[in-house]
Length: 164
Ligand SMILES: [Zn+2]
View 1 (tube, rainbow, N blue to C red):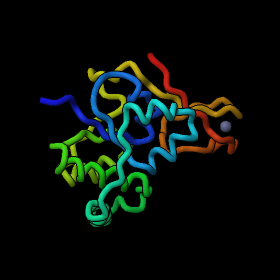
View 2 (view 1 turned 60 degrees about the horizontal axis):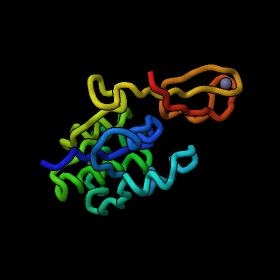
View 3 (view 1 turned 45 degrees about the horizontal axis):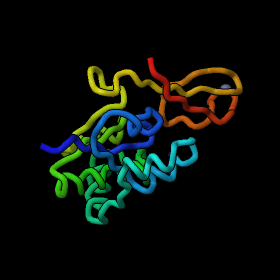
């Protein structure tokens, strides 16, 4: 058996998953674009994470499924690319777990039989990592990974991975 393979979304990077444990890591170019702006070490990404473009066939299939489940409106282009890459890896790599905490992404993944993992997986190798989203303006903290701007004061939110 080969080591486990994981597909990482942005929150998985913020949680520090590619920097610990063993395993093969994959992501898409759209995710890379997102995390670039959050001080994620680019050299580390290139040494430990394989960045791959999903096939157009899988993207079409993911869009079709997300439309049927009603999740399409909640999914970004990045989300769609991760789901499509997961489908590709099911064929070429014998499966890889998609690491995401996003409800809509998980919902579509389940319909497509894509294996899932969470950044906050209990009992898993990542249990000691939590991440916080907080506002430098008013000091409020949030847990919703989709938030980028503070709903209270409008300040850009800051993410921080921390060990607990
Ligand atoms: Zn605020």
